[in-house]
Length: 438
Image (spheres, one colour):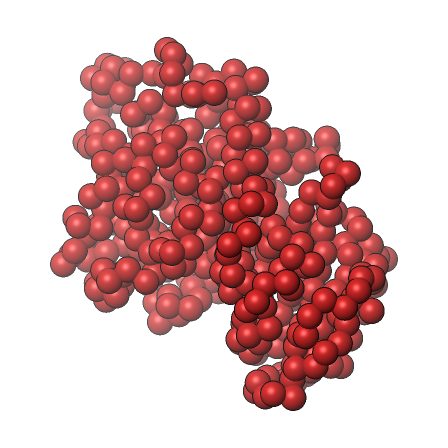
């Protein structure tokens, strides 16, 4: 299906020239042209960095790009003379692992090679000229952004509020998460950005420009993050998501069947198992990695989301070294796998690992008993596969509904039970030939 053909879209020229009761948009540069010139235009100037989270998933990438584009158009009051730049906080070599995101970008006229990645030569210079930071799809300036916490001016997210950057308040701090229910009120951070466009004087026109490029990008991610189903039907789309989807569908003029086809195409690209066959364990562990902290900030957990089963992941030649290197940064490290089984049913697994045996055992018990067994965890039984770091436990998450958005807050509650952090110095004795599935 080619969703860009036909007479579905509103003419950008018409929108730029014929407007009732409002002034014309100062800039009508296309979305693709903006991204293409974004980095060169910012060189040597003050920069407002729009940064997605370290996982660099579709939600993170598209929210950063589309909000930077919104700032670029008639938002001088926020920019203060700086240039907006979307910052992707992962390595350029890892972009091909995001096949569905590459499709979304290309559908919207964006060349993925034009994005700014954290290992690009220009990234350091742009960061040195950064005067302001906008966080999308996360709400805490971590990693390379730690020194710039005081420069955060806006936060648009849908994860639990960590309480950082307390100076960002009101409309500048829009976090779509119900802290009481421990659930996101929007399946996608793209919904939060869509709402920003709808609040803007020229937002709808910008969504429709260039064959509805921005609207199509936002719509695509909301469909993926929401599993193209309402919460009441077993999906993740909330009323807040649906309000934006209705607007975006009207702008793109996609029929319901075409939206379903688009979702299925992108979902198939994301879950294409053959894509992972030649990828290393190191790449998979950093593909969709997010950090979680205790309330006092003294303890930290990492959760990698994997579309490869534990059996396939543990078979990677670099599994042991990659896991040891990754978990050394955390008190406890988790891998959450998600896959489709041979019978067509959904499958999820959780792998707990630490250099402290008691901590891993306590974590398994905490997660198993949490909220009267919400996750419905069961020990995984399988034959011994390969040598691996000791102090690791694998379980089957038989309730496949809770995602990392629910497991993340559980992890933070577990971290709050800890009084000390383990010494995770890696030694040869940390390897043993044991069966994590027993």
